Image 1 (cartoon, rainbow, N blue to C red):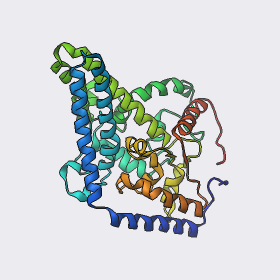
Image 2: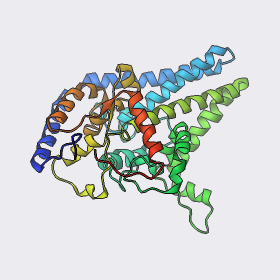
Image 3: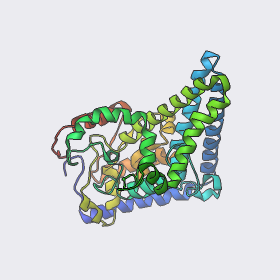
Image 4: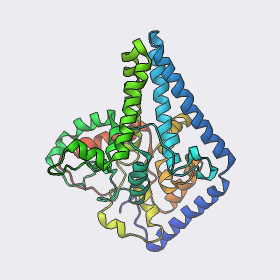
Length: 356
């Protein structure tokens, strides 16, 4: 390694992991009623904003109401996916005992099913963060964001198709890990629906709800509500794309070789989480709207800790990283997203791994 990430001895790695474990144990003892009250307020905010947004869109014959409706509905969808759904599905609030906030039962307002997310994200991504061949979130399988990824000519188009992917990011979440390979002698559409019945049912429900049921309920405002729902979904997709890509594909993040899956020494998993993640600085509102994934490092170290506590943990995590010579990768949204855009454009062409 270089000055960014000191190469740790086995003993240093063990002590690094022990320090993170101790911090985890301390904050775990503090979790309680305040956290339960917080996530219930978030849950109510999602519902109220959703109602306000859809009602305003119904009244969009009054010009300002269309913009109010889109803003409220987009906020509802963003908070539902980021601060509520993502964190609840991680089981962060299972201690409450509320079936509506249970990580194994919660379903969110997005094309992808929570069950699929538990497999691709909670298990694969968090267990094998940035390990090539294991973590399917690395460029979502078709965007080259690290020089270590094998180059193919089709990557020359990735600046263009990545742009469009950002506008339809929820489709990337929905289709990830599904059985989409055609089988000879079978109807492809039937194959898709039979192999992925739960996913197909969720997609039909989401599309029907946003693009048929609510527009029909609006009567003469059908097209206005349809356009508003589409705009809210696009805004949500753009926001989640930006936050998620800034969390793992910035300049200082590391792609690990496939062999890293065998690095099971005590503390090694924690080291990979720090080197494979990046934070985004900002205020309380920004952190909230990002689902506290602006604290991506803390989230990867403590995926079971309520995300509203990540800001509290961040200074101590940063101090531990400094003590062991591990760069605490953090920067403004403009800086981190510029680095993501640069990576997408630069690695569209053949590139060589660099030392970090």
